Length: 128
Image 1 (cartoon, rainbow, N blue to C red):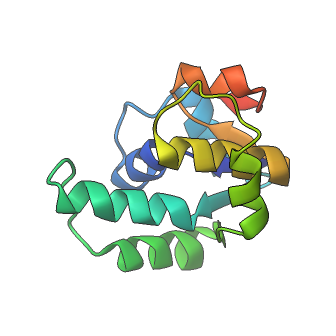
Image 2: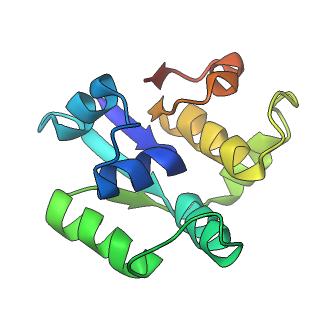
Image 3: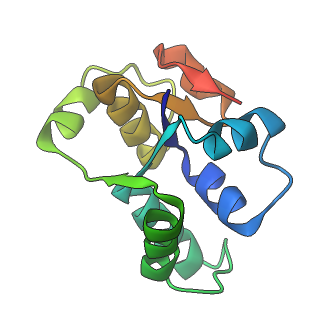
């Protein structure tokens, strides 16, 4: 299985937060699962930290390096085709970061790990 973690799933996995569902934890920990994280989520994490909606105990770069090096997560960038795909999405969600993750999940054939029920209205496979 190929999964893309929503931003809250990244933060909750990294901090051991119990709000991350058991199904999500099992999927992320499964050695047969390819786990992907988007640079868009790094941007969202930093934005939320700057706005003091989230407290970081390390830099976003350090967090991502730990996930990539120690846990073999794979990072995906933002491609122009992801941006173009945004124009095809109906306006179910107003959060630009979530819309971009949906576009990436659809284009990359990822299952999106998210607690956000609105995301499933786009037709992207989700797991929670």
